[in-house]
Length: 487
Image 1 (cartoon, rainbow, N blue to C red):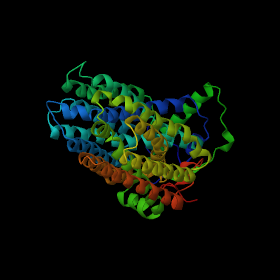
Image 2: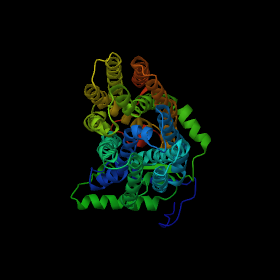
Image 3: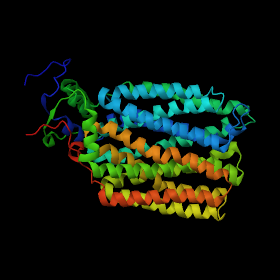
Image 4: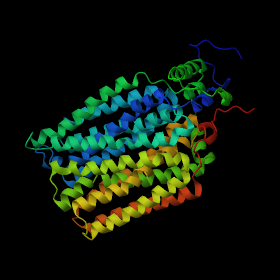
């Protein structure tokens, strides 16, 4: 086969022999990978900032002379955000597999930025919900484009810990949001109708900074190979290798192997459906169970936490942030400290452990709340413990889905299971829990928590039966590429 010049695309269907997947996986962890984590992981920090501020301003939205939301209205706006994330994830996930990872994480970031700034100028429930919908669409797209990029650039032996740590960084943003809310929502510093608007302007402004961080991130070499651009892919990997050598890293060239792939312009949706629903049916069941359970577990509880504090404990709006700080710390430390075990002990045992433990702890915490045996501070400590394990479980759901399906459908698979899981567990959860809180009955809220417990235990059982041992394995070995050429 004649070697094309760098600017040429190879014709669809041509077989390309490449060492790029092997070269990427044998790399030591260096400055390049740190920068990838920083530039892409900051999305989760931004999302954490956004979600925490919105959770913290629930009381401010109710007190706003312009909006005057009820608890149910707050639940509707949260569900609008999650509905946008569902549909945005599906649409942008499809585009990510067709147009490439890099183009999409700029498109999704722009969507998020414009919608967030627009939210600051909302004037009623409809406008607020609409802007939150498009903000969610941008974040949903970010999850798919960013997760697929990280999976394809990070060496296999570090993939589990890196993925969980990046997803867990959401809670660094949550901590910043909690601190920010203490000042932004203080009526002694600014009017009640101004503070909550500033929270959205800050989030939109920070996204402009992310643009600068992402300019240097390359397209996924794995995606380029399957789309007929091996010269460009080779140059990217060569530059990464040169950078690592300049840092005095020693690269093991003896472990390099060759993979034969057929190039393609896109993957037909019928082939995508066959791969996910037939060829990898068991993996699809695992992905659906994990994503649905964690979506309800997280969104139903976290989005309504401020409402519980204000409705049952009388905590003032401008004090909510102090309760969210330890909550965020537990959520961040969980994936950070437990993440390495997913690479060492294995995916399956850690999925079972984190999902089961967090489910049991949720039931115990819910019972203590229903029986009025815990103060607001004690309840916060309990949530810190629950979500230390729950956060690792939720992050592992994204890891499992993103590495369980072939390269050609990876982004769409991430978006599909994110959409289904969030749609079933996440969109319904906040509205449902907000309604239970409105009843004023602790027992009713406890029943909402028990639903989360049951879902997490079911997910743990399915992981025990069907989860794949993907630790330390190249992506091409975990899930056979659709474009793999037969020998």
